[in-house]
Amino acid sequence: MANQRIVPAVLSGIVALSVLAGCAKSDNTAANGGSPTEAPKKQEAAATTAANQEPVKLDYWAAWSPNSEEETKTKAQIKKFEEAHPNIKINVQLITFDVLHDKLIAAINAGNAPDLSWGLSEWFGEFMKMDALQDLTASYNAWSDKDKVYPNVMASLTAEGKVLALPHYLGIRALLYHENMLKKAGYDAPPKTWDELLAMSGKVKQATGKEAFGIAAAGVRSPQELLSLFAQNDLVIAKKMDDGKFKNTWKDNADELKRAGEVYRFYQDLLAKGAIRSEAKTWGWQEEDTNFAQGQYAMVVNGPWIEGRSKENPEEMKDVKVTAPPSKKKSATFLEVSPLYLYKSGKHPKEAFEFATFIMSKDWQTSIRPTNSPRSDMVSDSPWGKGFTELASTGVVFPSVSLGGITKDMEDSIARALIKNDAPEDVAKWLSEAINNDLKKSGELSSK
Image 1 (tube, helix red, strand yellow):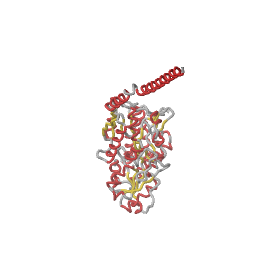
Image 2 (cartoon, helix red, strand yellow):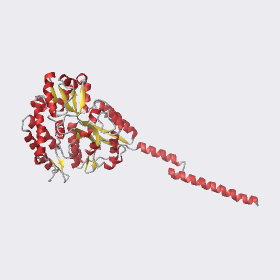
Image 3 (tube, one colour):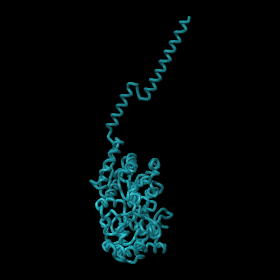
Image 4 (cartoon, helix red, strand yellow):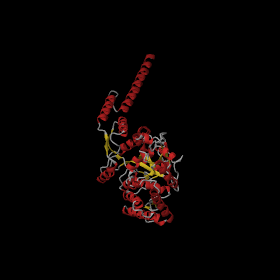
């Protein structure tokens, strides 16, 4: 009887073990999508399929200089990105800035813009009006490093509460000066105001035989310099009104018109007092940069890219120092935010954002943008770093409107002051009307 009772107990224990084994087998099978022997085969097949899958190709239009150090470093970073993201390949097309805008406009109109591209901040309003840009708000807010970017930089790429572009690098402007030239003229420090700059010009010329200052009166940089001068006299070229549109208000405000006229008076005084060369009336950025780098004048408001000139002219630039630009009513400088534009017609928005944030990562920026990064956690001790980045909070940008006609009018207004010698306040009135006419043509003029 005892044996009879033991047998069923043993049998029941065997059955229980079999059931448990079956459950374990069932769980393992479910987890791997098949039997234990089938699972490795399926995983291997999935890996093979992923490896053989055609990677996403991102079209990236950029404008770095061919055969430059920047190109070498950028290609190395792109390779690193592709190794970390084997499902993404970057198809780079190099296009110079002088034709990039028109190629992008044509591509946007044809519905085949690249996934992302370099660009100028002056194009932001135009691309926004064309409804060409991705709304990056949700992706940007989820990005872990978003708090590392200067707030005013992101504000310049945000419209109607939407993040519509990302910053690639900064071209903050500072006053660069040849310390030895100023000391030779008896000055231990650079000017802090427009009046001080003008007052120094005669002594600098007498002591060194060189002019005190340089400007870009023509070309793409001239409206940027003019915008910062307006900001230094507490002016904007187009104010956002209550209806969400824009207007130049100088003609409606006598004090604003007076201050705008003072900007053009400053240009004329620079010429009249010999602070700038007569030829500077038609200089573009090439002449401005080259002549300063060669020590042909004492001071200039310029960007951190001038570091490249120091490598070409080491002796002439070894005494160059960096400080805030001279001002009138308030400290201000031009904040050139070089955007990465991600386009609505791009075929791979998720991957494009992933690559864009890799470009904005600390690793990429440390390698390629150590002195002009949009990241606030990257402040280089280099003369071409901290002296510029510490001015970021005083930076001003163009309003988010279509700027093609406006920047051309700004360039023309400088010619009216320096070449035609029109009365300063008349030039200010002319520009005020021209800006509002341009806003009217683009449908962005406020009725307020």
